[in-house]
Image 1: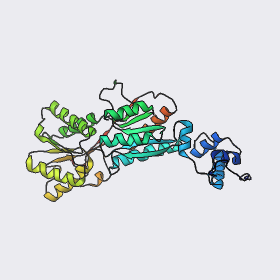
Image 2: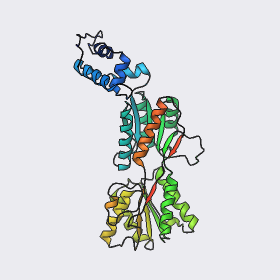
Image 3: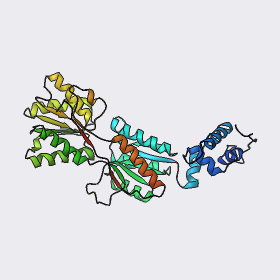
Image 4: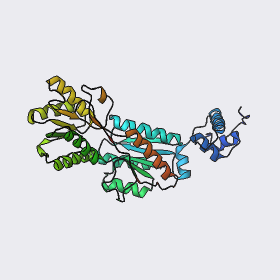
Length: 347
């Protein structure tokens, strides 16, 4: 039951209801009101309910700018990802957002479109809002972006990538080893008796190029590497492009007995093209993908792929960032969540 509310008259020229007004009406301190409205788990649920009811009764609207000025930090976390059209980043973002919201933080998202200049500009804009923390995709940034992150002193965790050297003094990051994942899928195809294995890729961002390196390394070790089996297209990854790449490979390198696509949407497009062209998969050519995106297990034949822990990465990175924002030092600065080879009927 709510206490009787006194008539509140703000002393501010605007007449706007303030945090102090809510605190006075609820009979608690302003800091308690702030914590309750953020939904912090340490605050008693009954108290949260009471403060929220008083806030609603008075029509209080938090002022994020004032909060940021008072604390030198806001209650939001900036997140920069390359794309929203890729389920990989949607799953990652969803998990990170749920984890941060449970701790009382909101997220401010920016989409970089794999453009280093756009990433730099988005970071500049988001730092103006004094974020409490930053989640940013990858370890490959231009010098200006790296300088911005360092000079801002905002706690930061990098997503998806890990440093090539596990002992390197790299930033805090959560991900898996892209190069090793590429090599592992290539070794899987070699173990199936495939020897003329092509690599087909689009987008060509740093993570794709690491998978390419893994493919090269595994084939070189097996004595099967041919540079003419690299098919690299800088266009955005899509089902349609996967079909185009498959037709190109079949026309130019008909002796190929397996194709490793850098992403599942390309591989899915290739499977559709194979059905259309009458190319038997896997007896004539095996097809493999990467990321185990939605629908890969429903293709015909079901797609062999590398399953990546994208949701787990989002959650773990958010948890690491929360510890940094509390002033704690994570025990493991580079958290490797691994990957899994999922063999289905396409190989």
